Image 1 (tube, rainbow, N blue to C red):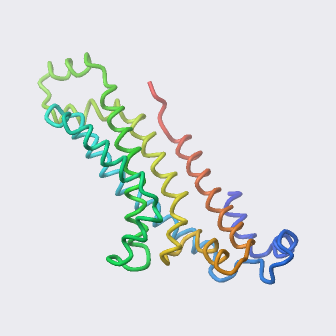
Image 2 (cartoon, rainbow, N blue to C red):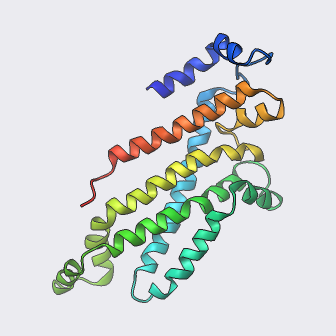
Image 3 (cartoon, rainbow, N blue to C red):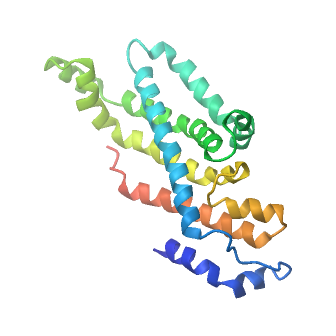
Length: 227
């Protein structure tokens, strides 16, 4: 509630922004509504987190199956490499093929957020007690039924911790998408940097960081307790 109230109040705090940045002629961000920027930011970051969750979870399941364990080092290395490339570099490389807008940003965020989901899935599935798996086999369960009804429910707290990290990373990093023309909470930051307007930079950075912290706290409260 405080975050939404701050978004609403920001355009009305001209005296505050002017006091903080007396050298700036237009310290109040008014080019695009904060709630519109918030909606675009969430759509972009949560969409990327959803794709990263799908890719990371599928890779984690593959890496923990008997036939796929040999691929675990390769998958971990590929996902680690994807995260090690700075998102701004991915955006720059993707611009010629994907053009300006949300597409290159979405690609960069997906690559950046896959690794924690993969590692959370692997850690969670590897942590299922062997005795539980033996008991499930003893009841006649097949591999995929065991995965759906036994392994995933037990691994869920750890898997969700990886997903939580992926969501927070996506929200915090999505601001760089403004460099490619994607509308988000980073838009005031880019405009501010281009026009030497520190007030815009502060407002965009403040709301981006606040949103990431709010998402982290909310997901932590909703997460089931690890056993």
